[in-house]
Image 1 (cartoon, helix red, strand yellow):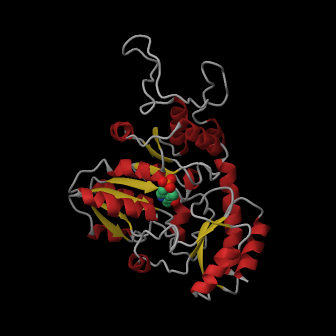
Image 2: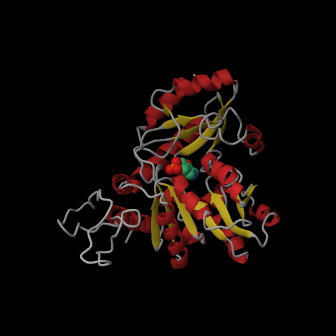
Image 3: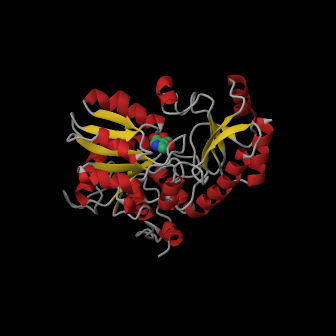
Amino acid sequence: MKLATKIIHAGMEPDPSTGAIMTPIYQTSTYVQSAPGQNKGYEYARSQNPTRKALEEAFAVLENAKFGLSFSSGVAATDAVIKLLNPGDEVIASNDMYGGSYRLFSKVFERFGIKFHYVNMQDVNNLTNYINANTKLIWVETPTNPLMNITDIEAVAAIAKQHKALLCVDNTFASPYLQTPLDLGADIVMHSATKYLGGHSDVIHGCLMLNDQELRDQLYFLQKTCGAVPGPQDCFLVLRGIKTLHVRMERHCENGEKVAYFLRNHPKVEKVYWCGFDDHPGFAVAKKQMRGFGGMMSFTLKDESVDNVTRVLSSTKVFALAESLGGIESLINHPATMTHASIPREERIKNGLPDSLIRLSVGIEDADDLMEDLDQAIG
Ligand SMILES: *Cc1c(COP(=O)(O)O)cnc(C)c1O
């Protein structure tokens, strides 16, 4: 079956009690048992919920995975993966990644004795300087947020296998429509389903997809034991969002390309970071492992003064100034003071993220309106 058909039918079973085509929102905390220990597979809603189950099956289909697990947020899903580890274990993570992942690693899990190395993974050879017998997990984000750097997933998977470390890929930016890391050798895929999977800026949600039964059992244990589970209403919203992922992503890609070239040709724009340009340093790898380049990009202005950058950020009318991404509506964001403010300035600069960088999540509106809006804002 082709992806567009699978996406719409993933996890869909008519409701057994009524035949409802959409899985109902099972707003319940517990399930009545016919005799002690005799139940219909559902005991208590932290452990199992039918709406969540339908969504988890859909998640698995999207990433060509055997299993999907659903969490109350993307960071809760990330938290579960790190909890597979023990004190003394080491993690190698991308140096340019989502600020909230960095904060979780550096401010919470370091206190529990897990060591993190933040490495530039545009060149996978950099990994070998940090890998040792304690390395248990490699954490990759590609394309990265907000610089759109690309990491070769297949090459990192080979290194991870050789050293018996797990590879987890944060696939939020690409979405499963554009990239399926398990097919490239990753062990776990993580998504902030808040973004492209939900797609409508109306829910916070996270998920993990994977193939290994034992790993799935460990992560399911963490999901129910630590309790970062989503409510059924949120599961329903994400399930509904997923059904249009393919049509939304096609338009995000189309609009993304138009806006990227528009900015690149704009006389007042200095540099555009978008992985679909053929002179982007990661273009060859992106082309190999992605089916399209999406609608995420960043840019800098020739006039990098705080006043000018602030003026542009405050002047758009269609692009809303807000954190987050991947929704149907276009957003503009200032990483240094918004999404990436939790990363110390010194670290940001070292990793190539200037204070003047502006990030765009190009939505699915009419591309002409988006370009006109940016043009009037840039002035
Ligand atoms: C938003 C985001 C997260 C965190 O997800 P939440 O749903 O906000 O908890 C993780 N990684 C990336 C790349 C993100 O954009």
